[in-house]
Length: 477
Image 1 (cartoon, rainbow, N blue to C red):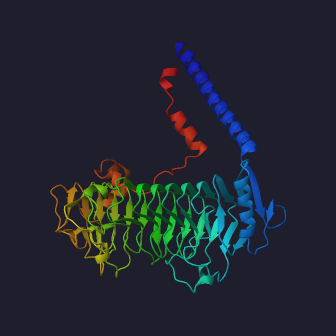
Image 2: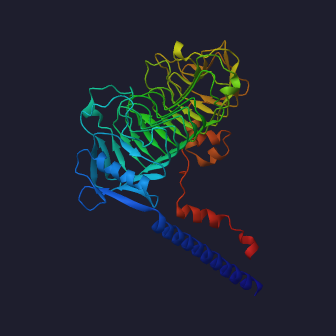
Image 3: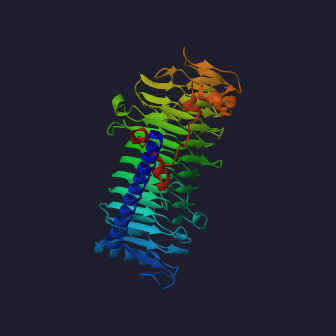
């Protein structure tokens, strides 16, 4: 009898909890909906005459800029929305002001006109105030850089960057499709707080994201195919987190992720690179370089690289900087719980690409711990296929702890050594990866599962799943 009463109590309690959660969710949804209806008024742009501003397929930035200016001048409006399916052809820059959302249907395309003839550093989208703007969101639509119909200009020289903000802060660019440009996808200079996520970026003329003299940069859940330079890049920038991105190339481009410190003024001591897949990048999966005048080591220190998967990175056999991770000029870099499989030249290398990227001083140490490094291949210019290659043995050193090594063509070390690394038979790691029971007891199981994890953005179903999983069920019986 007591058992039946307990069971009924549990069932009743469960119903109360579920009902309460549903009520809370509905109430929150209603509040958000009413808030949106009352304050987030939208200005629509289209091409069929039904919008607040209507374009005709020529010089469409004129109407889009009128809409953005209207939102900037009228605080009750926050959003300019580009209706699709439409292509908005622009012959001049689009200008965004403070507290503004530029949004569109996924079938809306902003496209650079043919033979635009713009000067360097003039982007397709930029801030309205030359002194800088703040709190800007760009989301949901497509930007076509129209590279092939402006082919008289070179890539990577500052022409036709898709988005560029200077002296600005609180920038979000997400859920965009950005492709075929001469320059960067999103370039930010001398500001703070940028978030770049859920974007698909294909074959740009420079970097997908490039932050210069910036603070607080986060990029996640992006799919990037490099063509000319890197996927994600920072220069004299701090407080950075790059995670859960997939970065590759199709036989072109530079490193997947690039970190640069030049000369003393800027401190770079809070940079995290984790849970990314670097797949067949043309140069290194991750390239880190400090160079120029000598600087204190605590101004270039403590980069944390963990739980990434490097697969066949460094495909360009003619490039010295090919490999998994190539670095110099940073102190106490931690490389932990990563999986390196089939990298070309070396999985991890201390190396200077050329004299321009030379770090002054000595005593730089890199900690390499709990990684799996297998199947490293020979590269004509980058090395003979070592797991660890210290090409800067007079100024840099590795601290190697408990790494799992196997089948590296050139051997495990060049100018480096370890007393705790373990070498396993060729094919053993692959065997473990296919056997769940073996994987559970594998000392490098964290490295085995390296790469992008559950998306950063959690949907409603997952939120409810997590909520119920954490309920104190035993206390209700």
